[in-house]
Amino acid sequence: MEKIEVTTRFTRSGKLIPLEFRCNDEKVPVLNVGRQWETNQGRHLLVMDDSERTFHLFFQLNDLGWYLVKDIKGSPGKV
Image (cartoon, rainbow, N blue to C red; front, side, top):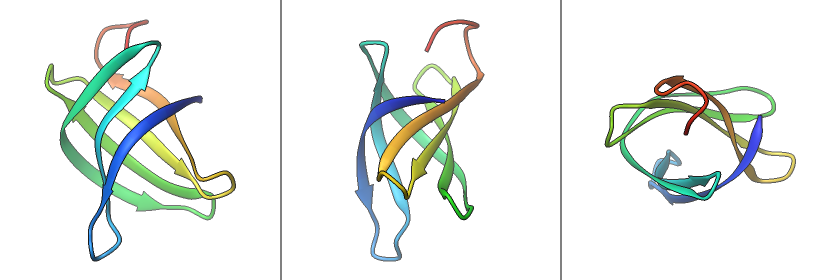
């Protein structure tokens, strides 16, 4: 997992809506937010960018930090 910077909006119901994230000096806009689920460690989110790449993001409760778990569907080795 890699720690990343995420610009996020919170809804009234407590859902996290990532708007964009930075990874390896690339600004990645979030076009769609898919599934979200919680574990004891935090909240997991599947998001898609405007190039239809899918990413697994994680908001960790211990440090209130965002992490890129993995690039699910995209260019190998690139974010």
